[in-house]
Length: 384
Image (cartoon, rainbow, N blue to C red; front, side):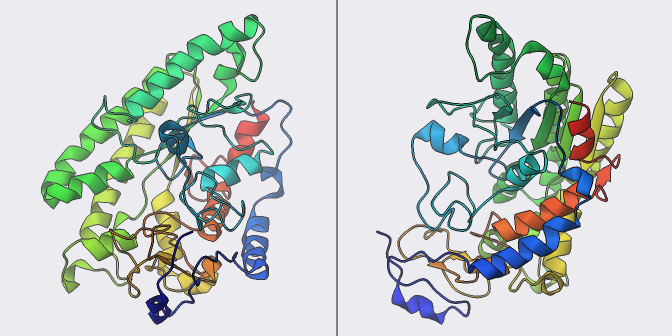
């Protein structure tokens, strides 16, 4: 059982005592989800005529268990405490954006590709793995490796179905499927560990090229519908704020590191140009570019308007204010502290987001106001 040090009471946010993992107060979480999820257009929560098929590629922002399956472990409490009431192989206290997006299509959560214990792939596959990046190309589980896994699944699944196997995807369903991509954060984060700002900027085109290659490879196997997220405000993560040397001139008016956020904006500008380019080059293809950066930064900058507090502080971690992040004592390890009111925090563990934050992110995604073109999951539902 994980111990929580008694000196954690210094945290001005409420602390779990030894061996206890209280849930976020039901009423608080309910009110946040009640207030924000109904803001979606009623048509978003659609009834597809066929089971929606989604193939997801990415990192920890959308990994629903691939890393845990791959290395044979589960995450320790209090991960998963809010919705699943137990660790659910996700780095959050509850659901991720990809989970809420699946709910909007009334389909099951995506099964990780690496799940070997009774997997059900009838509604698609999740190839996302914690820690993944676009480069290096051949290192598991880069975007290239994830797409390689997809290509193998693409060739084998229809053949196996003809031989009587179930819980897979038929040949025609690959053309009607939605392909979601959310990757790049780890490329930027790792680059800042040992490169200057200008050197990081110089590397960005190589990251974008890998995303371009991924979309092309999927397109050549019949993919026609792509949903591409840009990357979030890296400089607002409590982890980066706690670990990186900085001076006051590097912080913006909301306390985020401007160099990291500027790099993210540069990445996003190039990704947007790529999506525009591919719309012209690829035939009968829909590519939706989603401005995740603006969605996340808006919540951080206007946290109090959404009922959140301490937007730059991790709910689960160690060290106390202002960031509650300690690289040696991560969430779930001996000595961690965790907030009682998890739904009032945006950051879960200094890198990943709380379920309450993910719910708001998803409501904004599905509003179409942050999408180019302004198409929601409802469009893909009606065209599956």
